[in-house]
Length: 562
Image 1 (cartoon, one colour):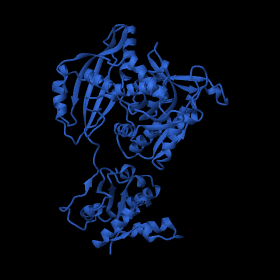
Image 2 (cartoon, helix red, strand yellow; image 1 turned 180 degrees about the vertical axis):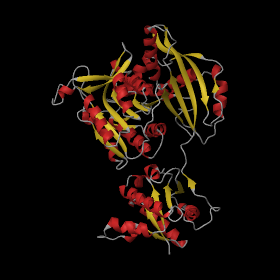
Image 3 (spheres, rainbow, N blue to C red; image 1 turned 180 degrees about the horizontal axis):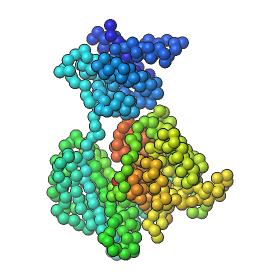
Image 4 (cartoon, rainbow, N blue to C red; image 1 turned 120 degrees about the horizontal axis):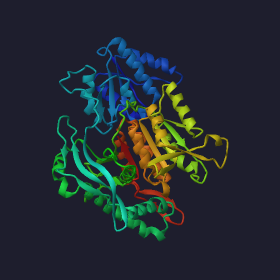
């Protein structure tokens, strides 16, 4: 009798036992290691023999299986056998459990691997049985075809284009403004874009007063939520909806949006939606340096608006069945071939702690802890390396080492101080001074501006940068400036925190974010998953003397893309 070998994680034992029973009812013999191997068996040789003796190979794709080196080794060995015998003589069948994408396991199988979707729900095994038997060649393909691995969900995009950047002053208040145009970019190839019939002057509806309220709520009240300040905090939370509606009306004014929004409203509910703010600071040839500097500053302020708060009067755009991803988009002057992010995701953590007056001390145990704890919940999916010492020369050396080992980093996660120099319109990150490596205290800083950092990241083809840079009042535009400059030189995506965040907030977000990346999701989808996690549960801590802390901080993680 022919035998089917099923590779799986021990966490999926119950599902595999049910699957084995169902296959036995259909006359199929199944070999699973939890049933056949006993203590003392030479595990790998025995399993190799079992895989070789089988007439077909299946593996259960689950979150746990994606983290299992054992499952990966078994799949790799089965692929070798298939190459020798031929696909028809030795079928390999991925079983996608509860919608888990194939991820790195799928890459072992080659292009467009096919899989059979299965669920652990009651009746799920029997519902998939026809497709499994077809894949085994036991039934005609006319019954139920094997499902091909789905491509990334197509994205319908609504773009707010902002050009001719300058400042608008009224009643002593200075706000960034731009010529605005709304464009609907369909996902279907060949379908024309829909442009707003005319442009208009966009003026930032949220100014310094609102920005100060947000900073107080997220960075002061969050640290000490005294009952004396609770009424003020509730008022800020109520204003989030109002500010989101003001942004929505300014970005999509009724007088100019009708034709675009009519096309947008016809979108199929089964496709993804994305709203992009496209900021272009370029001016006409011959523009003065003063105008160019003002345009760069305006761009930074426009990028810093809390676009994640966009609210159409009924709900935030990122919520609901028709959830819309939000990103900041800039013109990319260099399009680079960046590596595919596949598990294990290699992350380089840069934790810089200079202690001079320019960059006050941040407790490294507080800031680095969320990422480290989050990574502990993703064994096998993520490899985390801490840069030591946190200096620019050490960063260059580590990039060179990773390149030589053919294990380049997918993510650089910077945890430290950010600064913004208005005189040059550039942001930078504070690294520790190379001459102070041996010092236990009073280590000086070195500001690395984006004109130096960007080319380094570009040359090593880093596809994603995560900025957890401390936002001081004097450097509140650092993340926006650093992100925009990195995009211009070819970094595909930059995730940043618009404000300093609590340990619990950072921990929850990065865990869900990197988990989603490891499952093969887009960066934008990973952002959406992290933001939803923060929004669905606003509890952050219990503060002695102040009680329970609940915080609306889901909009703090923001995405920049080219």
